[in-house]
Image (cartoon, rainbow, N blue to C red):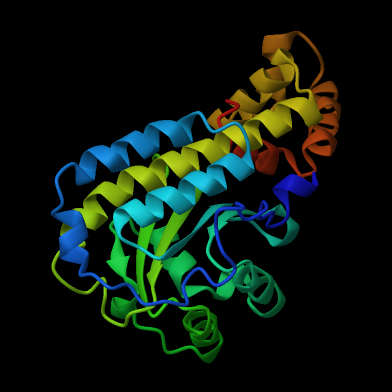
Length: 276
């Protein structure tokens, strides 16, 4: 399934200009975060993201909420780690779309230090606090600098225990040190909700695609639940009153539907996408 094996950035919203981060912000972050109704405005955007009808609408909302947060541009990536083609990376942009194309051309997701941080941590952080010594990873950060992300906040969207899926909201400003100042705590606090809702929206989108394309029935989902719990073919066969080889054959069909190499990966993918 192509949608589960590649980064699929939707179109940048028409409201986002190509040089979205060319002009430095003319205000302090603290002026934005201390304004009356700041948190309420962000909460209202979170509610709208939850009901976004498609990627274009979600991109427009990302642009609007990032501006309301006090950023000049933003990118969001929802990802499910995996081996090779089994990894899934999906994204929304509220910045210069050329960054996305350059990123895909020159950077492997596995070499992105910001994604690495988001996959391992739950707390927001200024990118300047992430120590990177590897030259390949440094190139990913340099690319962001080229496209105006001189000051960056990384906001992880972690998953529940037992799942590896995660999301990362990247907020950028063209003024060096912009986020490393008063107002950061307030911004990072409300930005968590934005990141979590964006990730939930993307997971729901992937789940709908799987349901539509794979057309898994309830018996197949039940076997995936059992696989997730650690039952072997013989144990499943006893519950279904069939032979163990029949269970294996049925799992092979599920693997083909989901485009994964084995039943363990099938159960993991189903769990990551909220199917079981």
